[in-house]
Amino acid sequence: MEDKLPIHKFKIGESVDYMFAGRHGAVGVYEVTQLMPVKDDQLQYRIKSANEPHERVVKESELDRTM
Image 1 (tube, rainbow, N blue to C red):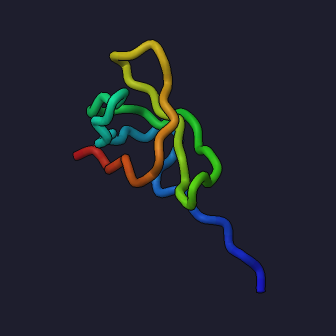
Image 2 (tube, one colour):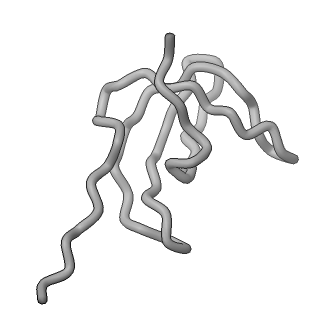
């Protein structure tokens, strides 16, 4: 049987809410800039905030759709 590749929930260019406020986290609205492969059994994304000069790599479970 063939394994199916997981499907990303969010698309490039989509606005998302970043919900992880850990040590280096900054909650808020970000734009998805790149779809990343699975790591530690979770899909990942590269995201960018207009308020920061850098991008972040985050897990899908740390993101939610913007309202």
